[in-house]
Amino acid sequence: MRDYAKVGPKLWHGKTCKELRKRGPEALVVALYLMTSPNSNMLGLFSQPILYMAHETGLGQEGTLKGLKACIEVGFCCYDEDTEMVWVYEMAKYQIASELKPSDLRCKGVQKDYDALPDNPFLAAFFDRYSKPFHMDKQRGSQVPCETLSSQEQEQEQEQAQEQDSFSLRSKESAGKPASTRPKREETILKTYLDACKAAGKKPLPADHSVRDYCRDAGISEEMLQVAWVVFREDHTTGTSKGKKKKDWPGHFANAVKGCWAKLWWTDGATVAWTSRGQQEKAVLDARAKARETAHEPA
Image (cartoon, rainbow, N blue to C red; front, side, top):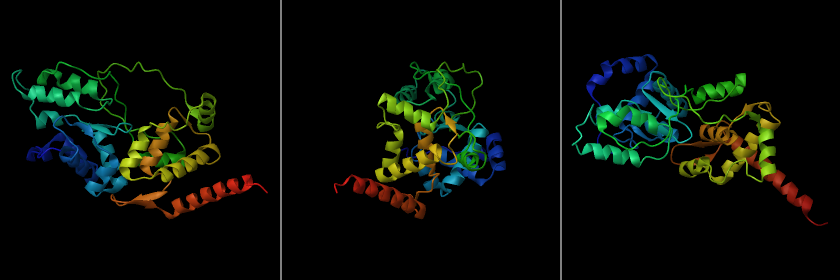
């Protein structure tokens, strides 16, 4: 955690801030939070879970996602939902300097902090932008184009009203970057994905998937995760979302968990507890489990 952060008064007269102001107070609060977040570093590239931001800003999840979406759209930052990494584009420039001399010891500090970052999609782009002014000599990651972000609020509207594709928090500002060479995954319905997992002897939600770490850190119990999966599975195999196709079903489920789309639990930032719907769904699953046990009991 940094002891201080540089936030100059000229910020309020800048073009970006004016654009954020047009989009509402949530955008300004999120922008200021990202520059002073307890998780932030001088690079402006750091891990920032939505849950923590929602709690510490007091905006709640809906307000935070609204503000973050605005920050992304005006080119203030980008966010990767899978790794929960944010990159505030100009933060390194203001926290460190516009340019450093090769002999400046801060150059080594920048490279050291960069090398210590967890894997994320923004490593190569950060190196492209700051390697010359900070005299960095070692690049990490591969070039990945930045994609337009949409908010989780928009995702939920699409889920409930239009049943269109879900959001994925990724980055913006891809001009000048080479296209990705990663192979495209085919979109399938959930049942097809489940059948493929069964045939391959794999679990639909891998044991090492990042959502499990997220749940542990957020205080979401394994039981809650299991109930969430059953509700998600039934909705996408027999419910209103039956025909929906996705390329990454584990990732889509992770979005549902992090966004608490099914409203199975609530949190005040310190504790996580079942909602009335969560208790109801849990009771249904418990009853089903008990019925199966009874059916297998000897006469």
